[in-house]
View 1: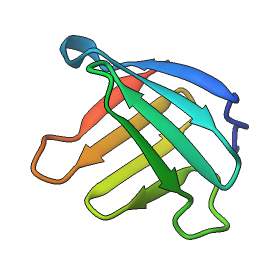
View 2 (view 1 turned 30 degrees about the vertical axis):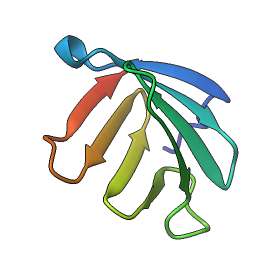
View 3 (view 1 turned 90 degrees about the horizontal axis):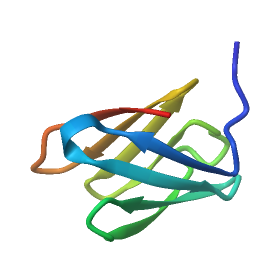
View 4 (view 1 turned 135 degrees about the horizontal axis):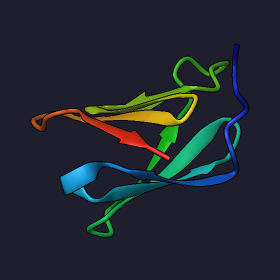
Length: 79
């Protein structure tokens, strides 16, 4: 069952801090604990749970978010 994602959500990534996600329907704005922010388009464009470009990807499923950056370990975060 697909769960509609909230417009704004914060996901706890344990020792790695948290990420804040603003859902803009065809894209998301993600802000890391350190303050770095990213605009990620839906990938493919019709998706509502997968976002990314270049070496960045965010997959949101229910209350979990998987945040992946090239060269870093993927983070599993929970809201």
